[in-house]
Image (cartoon, rainbow, N blue to C red; front, top):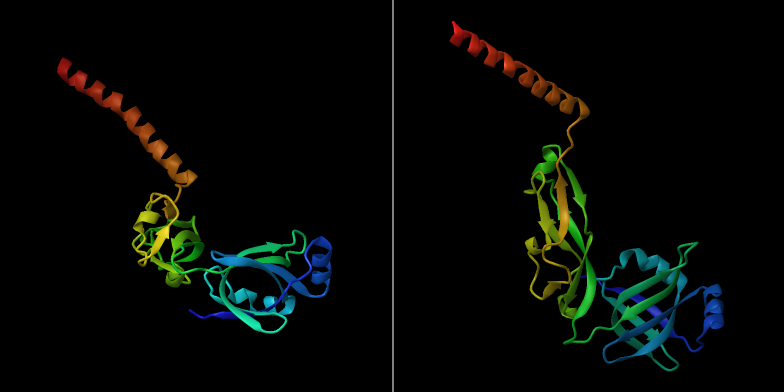
Length: 220
């Protein structure tokens, strides 16, 4: 798995006003934390974050280089949370998680559905209900995505969490009966329903006539 690199500096001034000044100066405030790791307040250049951010997901390992007064500290981290401005949608704060061996992580892994379902070939509609699977996983077992073959999914059939063939060490944090994807059968058109209704009506009208003829024969 390809690792991203970000550079940061220790953030000494905390509070709302220093944070506002920081953002105006072109930086993004952030915090680094994890089991066995004291929280570290840092700042990153907004230009660098925006340049690499579209390559980073929750499963991307990041080499975070934190510059202090006299040295540079490197940490292997994962992006845990992104806060955005409600109006401009720009990044205003980041949380980074430092994993620790022996401690499970809770992350969301993207699900990639492969193939065209048989049910879709027959006129059905594929509905994806889950695009990211929340899992419990060891830090060294993290994968960037989960590939699922859905070619054999027929009309009205669903793919459940229990149907996934997950790598060792990956445990879903969802009910095993939860539906991930379903092929919805096409609704019959109004014309088809009207035609079927007419056929039924004709059959109902014809039935008494047959009975009547039978009685006439008996009388003869």
